[in-house]
Length: 211
Image (cartoon, rainbow, N blue to C red; front, side, top):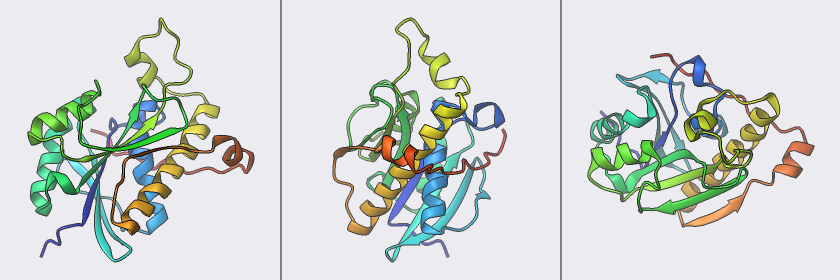
């Protein structure tokens, strides 16, 4: 018997070791941090996705990493919603956002893709934009002349990796809090990078299955 989750979380990224430590994979990282935080079950291959299930504050939740290129992730998300019997209103998508400075986290319900091709693919496949987005800012450090794709897809320096891991952990904590409250209210928050890095806080980035 399939239990319909209260929330279905999708982390956006690109599969394969080549992209593991890139800014475009912070959706994957945040789900890894969230999974560790709430003690969800192991990642299991479920067709074109990795999936894990768990409970947060007595609410069943499902976690999904699409194993298609980010720009083609919409079909996987639609399949996940269908297989769990969930609606777009129960969907929470976590992704990077170059329009936000690094360290900023923004939660919003509905709206456009904002130019994010992964979100655009999901909106197109679902025929709906009525889902929650948790956007992780990665925009700091990009040079004006630097190609956007190059910036988000190039492997990061070790210090940037560490910084992004801290941000993803903070996002995971906020997601857990939203589930416990039963509401993803729109808000923007700061990850508190300075204090977290001073403590040496880190979150391990999980292994991502290759295509």
